[in-house]
Structure formats: structure tokens, C-alpha cells
Amino acid sequence: MNHLLKTVAYRLSLGLLTLVLVSIIIFSAVEMLPGDFARAILGQAATPETVAAFQREIGLDRPPVQRYLRWVGNVVRGDFGQSFASRVGYRRTVASLVAPRLQNTLFLAAMTALIAVPLALGLGILTALYRNSWFDRAVNAITLTAISLPEFLIAYVLMLFLAVRHPIFYSLATVSPDTPLLERLGRSVLPALTLTLVIVAHMMRMTRAALLNLLSSPYIETARLKGLSRSRVILRHALPNAWAPIATIVALNLAYLVVGVVVVEVVFVYPGIGQLMVDAVSARDIPVVQVCALIFAVTYILLNLTADVVAIVSNPRLLHPR
Amino acid sequence: MTLEAERAVPVARAVAFRASRWRGPLAGAWRGLRKAPVSAWFGLSVIGGYLVVAVVAPLIAPYGEAQVVGNQYEAWSAQFPFGTDQLGRDLFTRLVYGARNTIGIAVLTTMLSFLLGGALGLLAAVLGGWIDQALGRLVDVLMAIPQLIFALMLLSIFGPSVKNLVLIIAVLDSTRVFRLSRAVGMNVAVMDFVEAAKLRGERLGWIMRRELLPNIMPPMVAEFGLRFCFVFLTISALSFLGLGIQPPTADWGSMVRENATLINYGDVTPLLPAGAIALLTVAVNCVVDWFIHQTSGLRDEH
Image (cartoon, rainbow over all chains, first blue to last red; front, side):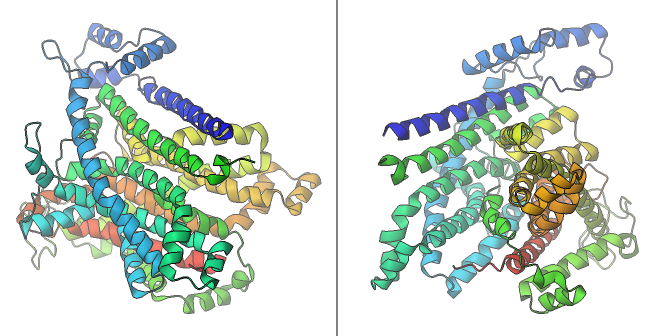
């Protein structure tokens, strides 16, 4: 047990270190701005005084280390600063922009995960069970194609056939905070379906690969030679040992959702954080971009960390050290 | 990025490459090709077709790349095979020129990424020690941020332009190339002939180029195909978001965005550039699959 705790603690501290380093990289975004950036934001007509005032406002007059510590301190307390779109008499805090969007994105991601994870695991187990059958080949060919397709193609094909030509679902996923839950679910069907198709392919193929990998081990051959049925070998002998890789696969693919969400939100005009980030990048609204990048990166790192910890904890060799 | 996790094993296994199969010059290649499955033939012919279109684009295209020739959003007709876009430019012409621009930029980016990542990876493999450690940790941190998100952030800093796009994606993608080239380079770097070359007093560049590189070619070639797909899809996604290749350059990702509104009228036109992207990535994947199979003797079941 002690050994296990030590391994987990080591992995967690590595994760924490990564988080700190990544926050430094994202913070340095402001450092790397080209010299004429203030002018680009304020317009060519800006006087030197306005430029200086703007630079003071975003804190460029203090040393970087001091500013980094302040930024981290503020972020931890939930104060993300002001959007560059703020003007006198029109204050937009980054937090007020991000908070509702983040909820929407989490809603979409949760909905996708609830559909995709059981579906992918089921398909993965079935294809491993009936490997090299026509079913396996068909699922493999379809998922290999789905992996190669750009997200926006899947999104527009679904939109064309399931919303425009056959109006079954809403083509645009415009939801607002006061949309009732049922309508919200209905409007999010197509984006969720697109994301599902994107990650099921990966998840299913990796589940199948993890199972097949196990099936080549000697103890499985023994079980076979004992005369056990194929399904019993997979479900009772292989699967319990496959949970660790499968948990890793699920976490990795949920992390992949983080990236997929950007394009899909833009296609369906879903008011989530991905769309916010794209808009902020076009407007070069750096504080908003930084916070969005930080949220995406932290989610990604935490999911990967979870995958690692699950893999460590579910390893029986670490649970019962000699 | 889960793609590479899944591919890592077969690619690494391709190191155990049976040299004899390709040793005979063209004859060996042709023998392998004749036995190739349908999917590989399909992939090769699609890639060939795209390359021909990209090279002779001005001969095929009926109009100029950014020439306004009709009204906005005209329907498909004999004059405009796939109609016109939001400014009245011929869509077929732009599709043809898009092959040149989109594929060209993606290939350039992938090559830059391999040059950078491959050189650093082999350097880390040969030298080892603190250089290897430092590069490895740097790559770990860079890979902790999702690539598309990182690219978006960098684009917001440096501003969207083709030059920035190519450099940003190449640098971010080189982290993956570094990982692979270091891993397969390591396996070769411990062999006696590398040791002998070191003792002979060969220079570092010579060892990397003449001792390591030829021995890691098969997995690197397979990886080139996969990285190309990934880079191609990333650039298309960024262009689709309006942050990649900028107008008036004809590019498939931006074309989907520009014509997307037609979807709401049940028109399939915006799916054409998206389909062109998809067809190429599927084709490259088919060829890479076959190549990995060929070079590693790998079968699905063990």
C-alpha cells in the first residue's frame, strides 16, 4: 500500500509541475506579443499616451515574475481580469464571458460521454469477440474512415441529412441559459452525435486493440485449451485485466473531446467555450484566449493524470507488493 | 492525438524491418505492389490523382483562381460545373487550385516538422545525457497542451498568416516526430556499428545521417504519412475556423466555411471541399496501413 501511495504521489506531483509549467507558457503569451500589438488593438490613430496607458493597464510596466504571480493569484481566486473589449463605461470581465459558456460546453461534453463511452466499449468488446468476422471488418472499415474525416464534414453531413432534408433535429444548437432542459437536450443532439462519431471510432479501436493484446498472453491460451467458450474467456478472463488500459483509453478520448468541441461548436453555433475562444482569437482578445487555453489545457492534463492514476491503482502488482 | 497512441506500436515494430524485401531495386518494389490489397491501390491512385491535379491546376481550371465570373451562389450548370461561391467565383476552379494550395502547405509544414523533430530526436538519441533529458522534458510540457488549442493561442499572438501558420504547426507537430525518431534512433544508437563510427572519429552529423537515418527509414516514412494527415486536418480545421489560410487563396477548409450557408438550403456543394479533404486522408491512411504491414510483417492477430 505504501509503495502504491508513493507511486501515486509521485505521479500527482509530476502533474502539478506540468500544470505550473503550462500556466507559465500560457502566461508568457503576453510576453511574446509583437511590439506594435497595442497599436494593432487600439488602431493606427492611437497617441503614444493611449498606448502607454494601455500597456500600464495590461501590466506591461512591471517585471514578468511579479506579474505572473499576480496573474496566478487572481486566477486561483476566480478573477480572470478584463477583456480587451472593455472600454470606459462598458466593462466586460473575462469571468462573466467564460462562466456561462463553460457550463454549456460541460453539458455538451457530458451528454457526448454518456452516449459514446458505453457504445464504444460495447463495440470494442464485440469486435474483439467476433474478430475477423464480417461484423468486425465492417466496424473496422467504418471507424478507420471516421478517424480520417475532418470533424466539420461529419457535422455538415449530419446537418444536411438529419436537419435540412429530413427535419428531425434542430440544425442550429442555439441555447440560452433559460432554455428548458428538454429543449436544450433536443437542440444539442446533432453536436453531441458528431462528437460521438468522432470519439467512438478512436475509443472502440483502442478497446479492441487492448483486448486483442491481452488475448495473446499465455493464461488466455490456457483458458482456451481448458475448453472454455470464447465469450467466457473474454468476459471473465481477459476483461478484468483490461480495465486499466480501457480506463486510460476512456480518459484519453475524453481529453480528445476537448479539442473536437472547438470545431463542432462553431459549425452548430453552440454557445460554448470553443466558439468563445475562436472569436477571441479573431479579435486578438488575449486575456480571453489565455483563460480559454488555460481551461482546455487544465482539463486535458487532469484527464491524462486521472488515466495514469487509474492505471497505477488498478495494477494488482502494485496493490500487493512482496 | 489518440491516433498516434494507437499507431505507436506498429510503427515502432516496423523497425524490425525485413530489409531483403526491398533490397532488389525496382523489381522488389513492383513485386510488393502487385500483391498489394485493393485498399492500397485505391490509396495510391487517389494520391496520384491529387498530385496530378495539383501540378497541372492552371490547365484544368476553366477560370482564374480568384476571378469573379458570375453571380453569387449560382446553381450547378454546364458553365459552372459546381456552381459559384459567395463572391461569384467558379467553385470547380477553386477546388482545383485548392489541391495545389492546401496540399502544398500541408506537405511543406510536415517536411519542416520532420526536419526539426527528426534532427533533434536523432541528436538526443546519439548524445544522450542532459541534452536528451532537457529536450525530452521540454517536449513533455509542450505536448501537455492540446495542439489545436496551442495553435489557436499562438495564432492570436502572432496573427493569422500562411507563414505563421506553417511555422506554428511545424514546431508543435515536431514534438511528435521528436518522440518517435528518438525512440527508434535509440534502438540503433546502441548498436556496435554506431559505436565503431564514433571510435573512428566520425562527426556527429555523419553519424546521424549515414549510420542512424538509413536504419530508421521505414517507421519514419510511415510516420510521415500519418503526420501529414494530422497536419492536413489541423490546417483545414484552422482554415475552416477562419484563422488559417486567408482569402483570396483558394483552400478547401476556408471554402467549406465560405459556402456553409448553402447547407441550410439542402445543397451538397459545401460538402465537396470537405469531401476532397476526407478522401485524401483516407487514401493516405490506406497506403500507410499497407506500408506498415509490408515493412513489419505485422498481422492483426498474434
